[in-house]
Image (cartoon, rainbow, N blue to C red):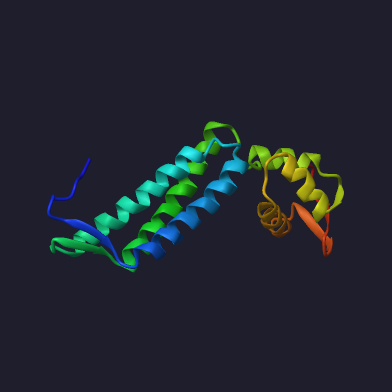
Length: 165
């Protein structure tokens, strides 16, 4: 484990703002992935939350030899982008290990199986809530499934399944 010399102090510029962005970003990811993968991915997400901080501080340390180190926005943003790639790879490995390649995450598959052939967004939300899927996630997934041609948007608030789910 790498540690900084004792004289180096970490000082994030606009730290409160970065902490808020960091927390909100990973809270959204954790919520979405937790419910999609039935809690199996939470350790990956939490570990990546810590890794983003470490990457940002290493990038900042490379840029300075001053005793007080400030994390620049570009270092933080670079760390965020790298972490998004690591998340995608981690979830890919997770799906391979659990034989879920080219399938919906388990909880989403259960949700889709419970939906009738044609349904309203309120029906989708009602069924999703019983599975612990949040309303905001339902709207995002409906939009994604229309885009990926799993669903057809008949009209506002009305959807039809296009493939066997």
